[in-house]
Amino acid sequence: MNDVSISTPSDKPIYILAIETSCDETSVAIVRDGHAVLSNMISSQIDVHRRFGGVVPEIASRKHVETITVMIEQAVEEAGISLDDVSAIAVTQGPGLVGALLVGIVAAKSLAMALNIPLIGTHHIAGHIYANQLTAKIEYPCMALVVSGGHTELVHIESEGQFKLIGRTRDDAVGEAYDKVARAANLPYPGGPHIDKLACEADEVVAMPRSWLEADSYDFSFSGLKSAVLNVVNQSKMKGNEPNYPAIARGFQESVIDVLVGKAMRAVKEYDAKQLLLCGGVAANKGLRAELTARCEAEGVPLLVPPMEYCTDNAAMIGAAGYLKWKQQDFSSLDFNAHPSFSLEGWSVS
Image 1 (cartoon, rainbow, N blue to C red):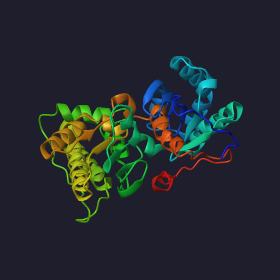
Image 2: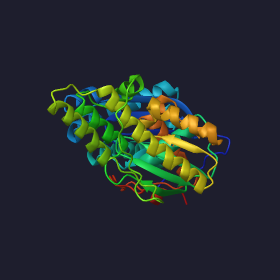
Image 3: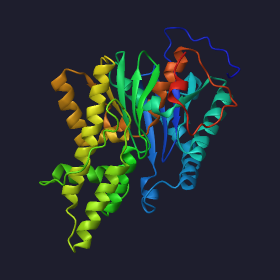
């Protein structure tokens, strides 16, 4: 723990300056009392990485270095407070790209030392989950479906900040599968929004397999589906035909959504969850949001979905998750390091 003295009156607002640099967005936010977003500055690197068809770790780290200081200044100014008002610094500790994580961590440590305030190493996926807290009240126990470029997980949350991972991808994450299918269809990076748009506009559908795995499993697997898509594309080209990409995209997306929604709804029932939380960048997918909304309404399950600006990587969600640790006065030491494969269950609050 930092060698700091905490004596905050119970009626004084808690301002957390949060930093997120786990991948290719540099983001800094000011969050008051764990839910009120005063500023949420995001600098995206998508245009930089698009030419390579994916994120290049060394370039991502360099871009974070170039922008982090400006983002901190802008976040504080936008929030209408001073650095002296900040109660703690929350920063993504992992998972993520180690070089990118380190940029944010070094900035956070420097600020915490200069201001003599606590430092909170925060879990990236906990951030995605608690992004829902920025606009709604989370009730426990609940179930979280986390879908992003690097993660596809089902997380049972028995009480505030208590995470139990019940299902995960065994190969590709949903976002990775979308990017690979988009590449096969000659669509730009990131592929998710383009495949989603094609699928929603398609009048026809090419049926694709569903990977349910074992009957009682909550794990996911999308490598076989990806291979099925590539097989359809290659067969069409071998016959001298232009692949029906909209129909293929619709078939792919329907397969993904069936499995995600089916397993999530089964988990909600088995664990008697009061709510289902949709979290992560793929939560912006229109097809997934529509199907989950319909199923939850039909089965009487409250569904929480963050606004679009809180679905993708952002620092406001890190501020929301970091507030859990603030309430427990559970702070990080100044010698903590980046953790690219950080355990969500291990980060649970005491």
